[in-house]
Image 1: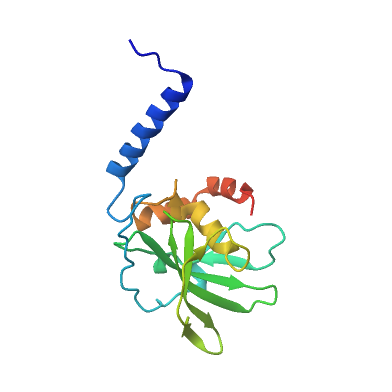
Image 2 (image 1 turned 45 degrees about the horizontal axis):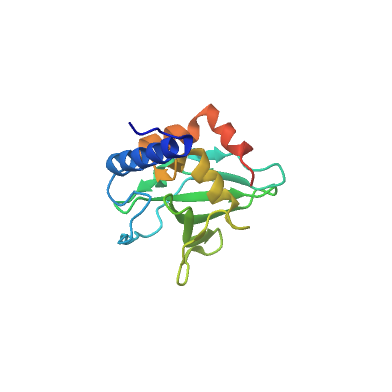
Length: 177
């Protein structure tokens, strides 16, 4: 009879959990995917500031951030794409069209919007760590408050919207920024 030490027990649990996650995760949404390829990115969608879901931001951030649920999309590549609007204290609005890759904790900005110029595509957009310093604090908050769950994208846009609208999302704002 083999005695399971605490170390062996933890190793067995981890092995079992990782195989369970791999079986349950949708295609291109697993924690390890060496052959991942980003899907073609559509043009930035039209957005409306009036229907935005407010994102809880750290107290030191004076800009109001919201995600327009009408712009949320979950790609076949597992990337959650959205338009986030930023409203400053004077009421000026700007926006970004971004994608979050939950499995790697990365964000990519595809385009930026301003009232004067409309959408401007980002030249050579690159995936960047979501935990890096500015300007990605809002992406980190969006990921933690609804777009991602346990480093996987949620299973549908409706699930993302429900999570972002949930009163319990405030717990996500307690995460160290």
